[in-house]
Image 1: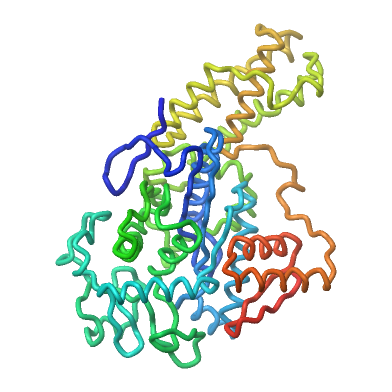
Image 2: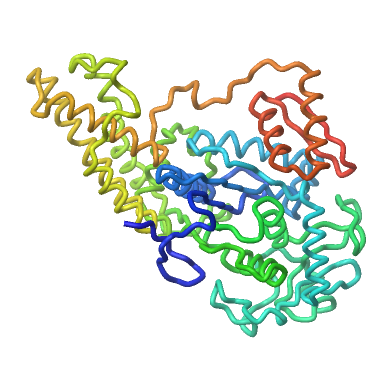
Length: 487
């Protein structure tokens, strides 16, 4: 059975055919770094982590990018309230993102492009839109002409005449007055500088990017004109992803993404999560209760990614019980392997797996990443191992031959890893803080500066992540210089 994906653009399940055989280019909209990540973020990044893991399990080489929006009104407002800078707020919450999301066993993306490191590609894309008469400048601001793109609304199904200004919640009040925009549905590509705010030089004057242009420019600069999969939360279909399509496709004449995937929203006891309702929960608050991170992953994966997910104490309790069942299966070797004659030398990933269980798992996951169906296979294996564990405990033997039990255990471990469900030691949940000298830090920063000047953003991000992993935070300044400090 071939992998099929529900494509938001066509509203159909389609057979997955990558642009390049054996390789997948995948992009997911990342966080705006002004606060700690919440349950909605946890669901989204667990979902895309699982999609990536399954693609790799299926033999694909996946290049997965996830951006950081590190310039935004929300970041600037947080900086003002804390009497600090945009750079320091961004760096604080980028570091917090990694701390929280790694506890959930989410694998790092291949690259993490940042808006502030992609200003030149943003300028280039806006200039091309302007040349093609899809953009216009007004007093230092630049707007997209939505009426010029005949396919506008094809992702969301919305019509221009039904659209209101400010739908994204990221628009200045002055924009809503109608003094600048030609049409209410037009959206900002570049915003003129305001007093006291960070700004960059541009052909339209000092300013900063609009929200939507960021992802279009970063995808094009880092992955090319068309990618295989573009993921994000369902709340991003309109206006963010709709606007990405409008910006990118009129310039390239090609699809921005061949498959658009969107995960469902998270509610709390049936209500939208919000601070005003008092039901807003961050990832770190949840895990610090404490709750095993694997319980959260299991809770997320028990629902299909496109369906709504309701967070309740009963649901978490149910996921906790389910994890205990899986954990017992995963620990089977450690508890009974020696008694069954399993030697370390003959336990390895190449041990023959149970093909029938692998096939059942793939049938479920090939159907638009049906994780509940995939979990059913894991529980079947775990329950059989638990039953035999009880027989060993009470009778001293099993009904299933030792070699077959070893196959079952190896199959369970292999498939559970596709879902990121692993028993991690406390040490594996922490980032090792290796000793690094000031001289080594400065040398890496200089190497990163060279990479940025040469537009080698992959190397730039890699160096930043390398330093973060050993407890060194970098703060990029608007003047192009970089400050650093240890955690």
